[in-house]
Image 1 (cartoon, one colour):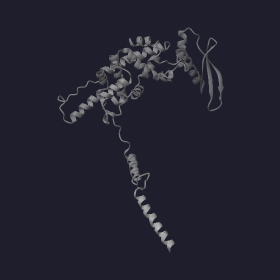
Image 2: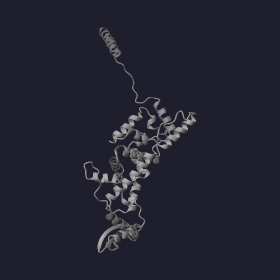
Image 3: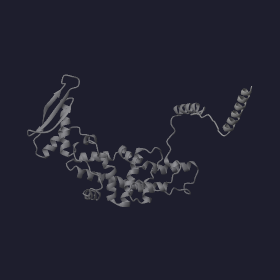
Image 4: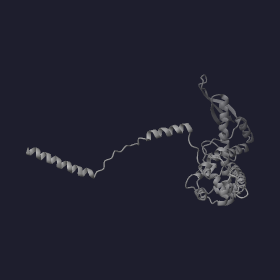
Length: 332
């Protein structure tokens, strides 16, 4: 009995000790997900599938937006010294003014009392388009002196197209600052806004800085582009004959160099163009006519200095020899 009594008292003492220790320790069960999370996630996914994604919201309607500070940051980010008044005017499109006036009429606000003290960017857009066309034309003529006028116009039209200019404008952050009646901003509105920014830069810092701006952001889009992706030539052999006639070179003679799989559904022909017993160029094709046209295009690329292995443009700021070229082009 003495042994049992000692055991009972020991167990009682140990239990009291455990109770005192457990009072100071808080034990709680932790779950990785709440119980309501599965149903809530399912309902939100079903709602998104039925209603679709929410419409995009302009940056100006989101929190922490200071338009004046954003315009200043845009100028500093590009390392250009804009006149802030001109830069703000460049972002105001006529469609925005018309939409704002219609909205105020719908609210019953007197148009004379609450007139908009804003000026649209029509004049700056015209100046920017004129300067951009003249600069790009002069730059192409100086970079490719052998290229005919049709080729220069095609390259300029490619560099000033709606899709390309809108792509450059969006990557520069112009879309967030553009005052437009629609959002996302249409490509034509972005195109006119970008040209207005060029006009504002020309008036603020002069044609040289505007030319450098175009060289850095538009001319660089020529990297990796093929000449005949921008210039559609229907009859390359006829154009090659004209170029050789101007240089008093004998007319080209097409000759079959190699062929493979002529009796299969995927034939391949290589045609070479010879002039005065010298190989001008060679090109592949699925037919003899296609191979002859491709060889003529290869020869034209060599004549115009637009081959794939030509020396690339050097846009590094250390190249001082480009400054006189930009000055002469900007002064046109």
